[in-house]
Each structure stands twice: as C-alpha cells, then as structure tokens.
Image (cartoon, rainbow, N blue to C red; front, side, top):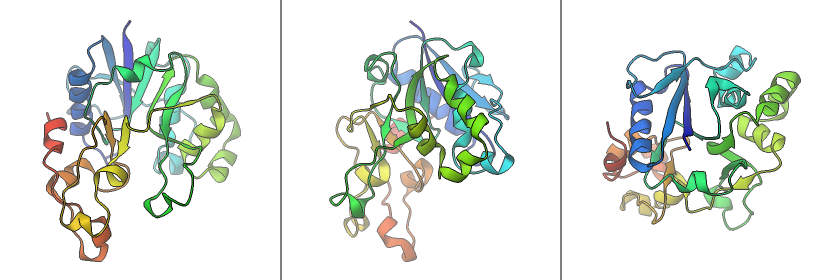
Length: 249
C-alpha cells in the first residue's frame, strides 16, 4: 500500500533545502511506496520529486498563521490532496536517522504522536505531560476532519484558551497512542550533554533513535557547526559532524 508523508512550509523562516533534505531522508529510510507532499505558498527550489500543494485554508487569522504551528491543523481536513490511507506528518526541522517503517506498522489506523518532553530541570520532579508534540504524528487521511472543523467553529476562543496547536490537538484527539520514547528524541533533551559537559563534549545520537527533533534552537545547520554564546553557555553546542551524514542534499 502506498503511504503519505507530508510537511508544510509557509513564510520565509525555512528555505527549500529543508524540504529537499527531508525528502531525501524519507527516500533513504522508507522502502515502501510513498507520496511526499509539501503544502506551501512558495515552491521555488523544491526537488521535482516533491509533490507540491497549496496551503490548506484553516480559517486562521493572520496573527495565528504567523506564529507557532497552527497551520499544521489544516492538513487534517478531509479530502486534502486526494490522500488515502496512513499519513505521516514531519516538521521540516527534524533529522531522519533510522528506518521509518515502524511509524506505519505500529498501531495501524490510530492517531499516533510524540509524547511531549519534560524540561531538564523538571525531569526528575514531574511526570511527562499528557500533551503531544506535533513534530511527528500519524493519522488516517479522511478521518481527522473533525479536528479542523472544530478549530474553525471555535475560533477565536481556541487561540485564547490554548497556548499552541499541539495542546489543542491533544485536547481534540483523546484517542491517541504515543510513539515509543526511544524512536523520536529531542536534540536538546537527549543528544546535547547537560551544562557544563556540553562545553567539552559534542552531542551524541542515542542508539535506536529514528528521528531527531530540533525544536527551538539550535536548528540542524547551527548544530552541525556548533553554537556558542557567552551569555548562554548552558545552551552551547559543540560541532556535531554526524548531522551531515543524515541531513544532506
């Protein structure tokens, strides 16, 4: 069965090379037939193999479209781009480091998402939240339209009540499954050493990790070269050469 892998790019924050490198990662680590769809208002520079579609209209005000990940929820509309079957959404700033086959085999026909991570200073004091991280999630195309419909019906109250789209998504979809913790890791939480070890040791890729999420900073292009700022030494990142192996044209 052909599966769907989709991403979304709006504005100018991410260049076309993020989409192209994401496609190359999928092509390398997924053996089954797939459609790779990018929803964007600017297709310049994208590889011919990338299937381009316009941004879905989710009824969001301009302020919401320009902040956070709210436009992602438009991808859940029924009938979008003629998709059928399982659809795996990937943020542009993720690094694919292992096989993606398991993301389609586990919990078939169910909604699956990352369970969001606890901040380092709370890791041993608080349990992991029941909130999903929308950097990686899978759904059945055509069966999640109620989320996009609810978003439009309850605007602007949704934007006032929920800080970001992943909190609303976790609220709207109660029947969900979490990806196994070791499959999808946070670069900041699981690859970078804690301060002050981060000043001496470069980030390491955890064994078994299939996707690395670069939420916040650094992004892949910053981490590969290293990031250093005297006022933020606790966030300093040594050069990370293994990124070049997975994030390439």
